[in-house]
Length: 484
Image (tube, rainbow, N blue to C red; front, top):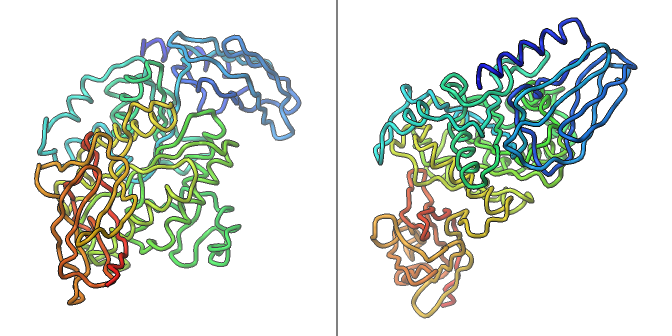
């Protein structure tokens, strides 16, 4: 079937070699079209030329504008694992795509932890738990024909989207593809039973502003004054240059949602206090580009690491900078509609390594969010415990959690760890905690009258508190008055 895709591509080139009729680079053989949403199909032709489009049973036509661009909007299609017709004609040319399926489409973007590919296993440390070669085995054995991949190369020189087009799964197509995105697609396809297409467009070491349109920063009350053309005066970053080459050409191809795995570089740059707003600008501008205000964004918390040990960073770090950044990331889910975060405090093994190896865990947790929040699968637990309220009962501080599924537990069967509180001596000390149902009880003995409870509040913290599904609890800090 892979050979059929190449044959169809060759025929397409032969048919359109001398014609000016062209499709956007996101439309190729072997692609997946988004089901149950209106479809936008676009491309270029001679100005004034009429273009007709037929996808499945849906048809439409358009006239190329003065700049040659044309766009057709079609009614939604139902999911189908059987190939549908995809034909475009006009301007003396005819394009026919082969092996086009209809299902669920997602875009995965970010920096190196999203870029971390299915063939990166020889470069990075192997996991110590379970099968240490799981990534390699999956890479070598994957072959589900219902999963399709579109890989966007790290190439900013051309004028078109840098991609070889949609591919079926093979060792060749998986080699550069995001591991987290692949495992997300695998879990989604296994659960939904429909075709799944994922676009992988990411670049290691990149700050969030390079993935955001420059106009969003110029129009921002917070950042507008800090712009010098397309650059931020504070750090010299050119806003939007990866967006222009690696994201904008994909819009407005219909898709279900976005996966985002980024933040390490902005933490290193000292952007903790403004990261939530930068994330808001990214989400809102992408939704605007797709003309879809309800486009879900599911993103990944950056993992525990010794950032304070990085001596060459432009801004020196303390042990508190990472948990403060987690707080900023968690705030995104509270303040930006239709977003949610995967917690990853449990996946690092080497706290000097910025790339935790368990990318299948990340992908599967992202899939849990999508299944529950986007596809309505209420039977799927999509997150770990989150502190709901803190109160004082007698000689105990009581933290009540939501997201406990069948109840709170610990990964190692021991008492909950990484709970600290401000003592009468003015220091934060570890406190004993115990579980009762969905609550954690902490003794008030020796604590300051106005204390603060901190959970997992350290760059090295990997707390053992989980829910019945084994999903980790979200770190937090809360002030408490003991009233005495």
